[in-house]
Image (cartoon, rainbow, N blue to C red; front, side, top):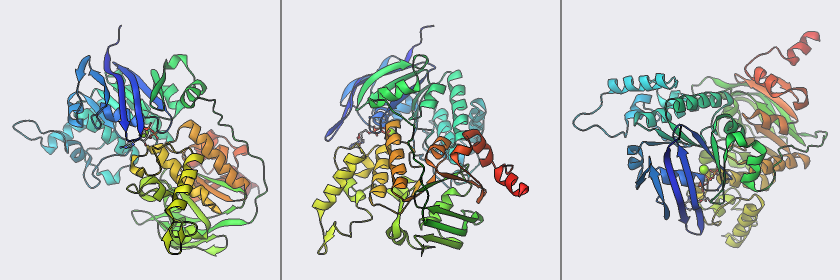
Length: 514
Ligand SMILES: Nc1ncnc2c1ncn2[C@@H]1O[C@H](COP(=O)(O)OP(=O)(O)OP(=O)(O)O)[C@@H](O)[C@H]1O
Ligand SMILES: [Mg+2]
């Protein structure tokens, strides 16, 4: 059967001041396929999809939808043409229910408005049809990130979308949620939908995509059928060189304690303890990984260590100094770097320029402030150096942080936090949203911190990342550390089981034996 093109983008060019973001891009989506778009951070993927969804106008090129030329001047036009987009940062109203969010903003039908009851019924039908399992009456603030994403999917289906665009949908999901999302996508294409999928995860592409278009610096590098490619070829097409994920880590003897956490208790959102009496130490020259299923106290632990959340009891020491419940700034000055989980809330000031963000924590110190005045030349030089070293792709250092691509925002934060030379680096999901080339680089820099005799505390849902970077792995479950292991003593399967709360582990055996 000859498949028809539901989307046909031809010669799309988009320029922003100082940069051509899309440069004559051709992209087509066939009926019933999953088409992956792969490319480095800043390659122009989100921009291309925002053009398809009517958020930007191309400077050149044409778009056909179901064979007909289309002028997509705003998202409402896109929706009328059957295009739905699931953005990486969700746009849901927290105190509202699922059904309320879904009817919100959908155009009321002429003559009568949709009743809530009717909406609930339709949401239930759609949810059942595509295996989404969403409760229409649940409030957004009460449901998990994975569920919230399903609400975004439902929103597009409710509005009649048959062309779905997903922009890095799995970056915010846990491994189990990713599997479920891939199932949902399979069910969508089985029922006639067509999907454009942006992802940095080659494993996912190999699992779900039919074809892949690779974009580098705004240009299409190639278009391949999944069946005719493999992950290393894709990685090479994308970054223009071969990528190695192997990490060269020489054994070193850990030194003095850098971070000491004693019987820490931290309350969660509902007031019950999310961290329930945790004790551990990170030493000089050591990467300590925290492995666990999302929601077992990781976020609250890190927030308490970095001064973003109050500790109820217990003690935190950094380089011997008591920093329990100290202000974030004081903690940072005692010698802590922090790559936060939520880069928009805690990492960057989006309205500030890149150069200001690079000096965010240090602008009032030498060399940036001299004789009471800000030395902009020094600030600029510093920002320029970081941008080059960490390969932050941007028009220039005066660009607003908001205008950087997601991955480049992340690289900017990492650059700033590593560069200030902290004794302890806390890295929460450090490579979320990064392309494979950038991940390779960031991993090397994290190990380099350790090799220099600094301490690193790593929290990640990517078990591969935990196992390749850590010297020791702590397993967190239900607010407690329930076990400890070393990468060379375990594997992702065993670790996954222990994270699910199985206490039948080596520690238990050891203590029984002893
Ligand atoms: N409104 C804007 N003004 C100026 N430059 C912009 C704007 N939006 C995006 N850019 C630039 O366009 C380039 C491409 O950004 P885009 O978000 O499309 O990248 P991406 O491929 O989605 O990357 P990532 O994988 O990091 O999400 C980046 O260099 C970014 O700084
Ligand atoms: Mg993007």
